[in-house]
Image (cartoon, rainbow, N blue to C red):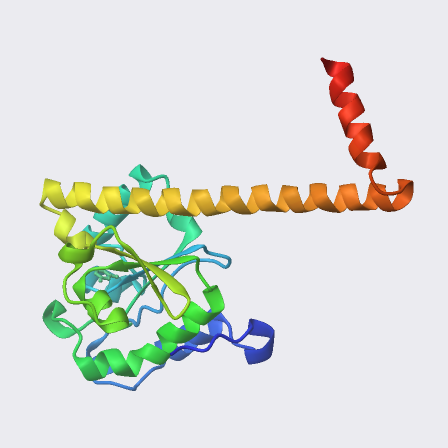
Length: 233
Ligand code: URA
């Protein structure tokens, strides 16, 4: 289980993690990479997207999802009303596996502490799992097609499961699947935002009423509001 520590206690930062990832020699992928790809995005981010591993374009640029799969992802994000700049995007493995093979279990394990630290710092409302590798690595899931569109909670963290954007490059049906799931993600975040604004304004109202009652004595504030309401009729 991952234990979250506030940033001021750990003194950790996304920049520090990125620097460590760029100099990482923990697994053999470090020998074949051009550039490590730590991830991209600003704090705060309510959504974190986690893919599999960098491909050729990502390896060349040092940025996640900037090739064909990135274009499919960008399109789906745009259609779902989620600005790419508002999310943090990263991968299970931070270096490109040769020939874009799936990162091996020991490569995933070697990279995991970087990901855990990123999650801990970002503390996203929802982590969006992109594809089977991220699903099995993070949650031990078997098939994103069986569970896509579901929001799962594990150790206090919520996850939305969806397909890998590479599947949406040539297949229209998969494109709709990705768009539908990311739209659901956008709606969920919006719903939470509205609920928190609503409960904050109720808190404010309650605080205000308590303050008035303290000043004027119990019940007076209630009577004042009732009188005002009656006079409006
Ligand atoms: N595929 C991934 O899983 N991640 C990337 O960054 C690019 C392609």
